[in-house]
Image (cartoon, rainbow, N blue to C red):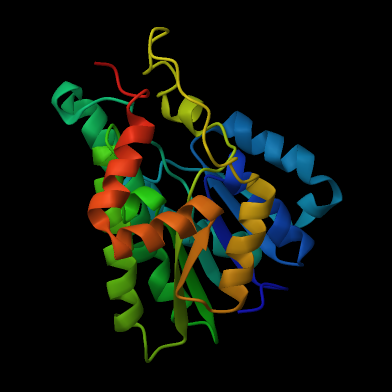
Amino acid sequence: MNVKDKVIVVTGGGNGMGRELVFALLKKGAKVAAVDINEQALQQTMILAGELGKHLSKHIVNIANKKEVEALPEKIIQIHGCVDGVINNAGIIQPFERVNSLSYDIIDRVMNVNFYGTLYMTKAFLPYLLMQPEGHIANVSSMGGFLPVPGQSIYGAAKAGVKIFTEGLAKELSNSNVNTTIIFPGAIATNIKINSGAAEAVGKEHKVKKAPIKPLSPIKAAEIMINAIESNRQRVFVGTDSKLMDFLYRVSPKFATALIAKQMKSHIPS
């Protein structure tokens, strides 16, 4: 789907990869509805958009709240006239802790934002997308959605749910006008730890080792994601680490999981 002149909804549009998706779409001539729970962050996105902001609307919504999400399509349509695509980008990680140490409040929050937020947005907008000549749903999973990552087990479970949900949805929509893309980012240079409330999860005595692969810039990540949408690709790996670990996990799951466990060892308190 060529995004030019299309109306695209982007969740998590207030910062990081979501903000760069908003900017990249606007530069390609799309009209964008940016969704985020953080009003101040959304306002900053509007300011930074500059002249392109005339094609941008902001919507303060908690995607984990089903009623708020269900009311969103009509609000966007009142502004832009229709909706052609949705990029479910918003997500949070968990504190870097073992499952045994996580409270149910944290578990519920991670599952609600990552999985149910994606589900609610998809369910709310799909009827409207089916009415368009062409529609697209892009759901952001994670490298942790196909490969177990110690210290992020709940986050990984939620993102694995997004993966299977989107792959099943793709088959259900195979004879329709709506295409889907499942996205697997690796390490992206964003503030997701801070935005997720996980930045303090690793104590001073547990210093994190430098990543062996430099995190991809959110600008480049957004470019890859939008190219995949415009090419109607059903799946895309964003970053060298994501591509590499997908290959290793398929060739030798035992080796791949041991490698990730070694890398995560310094992240998780003993």
